Image 1 (tube, helix red, strand yellow):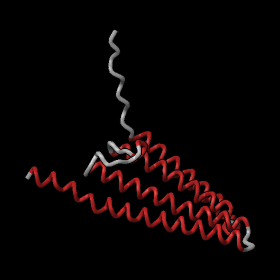
Image 2 (cartoon, rainbow, N blue to C red):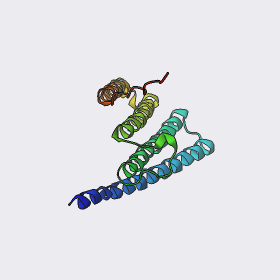
Image 3 (tube, rainbow, N blue to C red):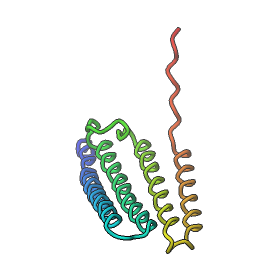
Image 4 (cartoon, one colour):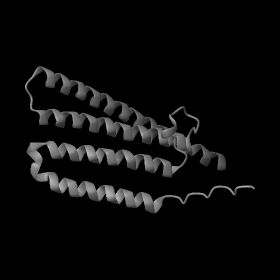
Length: 160
């Protein structure tokens, strides 16, 4: 029974790979959208605000892809293989590491969405509501992060 329970951790491979595939899709779509905005901006007379909104929309998709990538790598690293070759900043040792990485990327997405609303002249009446909502969400994430973080371990005693 012990062996069977130990093997169930490999069930995480499916959502980890699905997250990575979704991440690659969003990053590709965001990159294609960015190229399309650049081409439209250079070849036609579109307003600067429309260009900004298009660029921010593309960046939003790329950042969301980054979230999915971090989730996919994090799940895989936590449950399946701790030795996958990823940059040091992407290494996940426990759920707190994954949580803090996700909160950082989510805050960046919130900022991009807010700036997109801020520059979109068709949604000027929504700026205050989005700003308050974004601020409340970021504050809530900060409080959650502080309330659930593990206490730091003191340095080992210094020998004299």
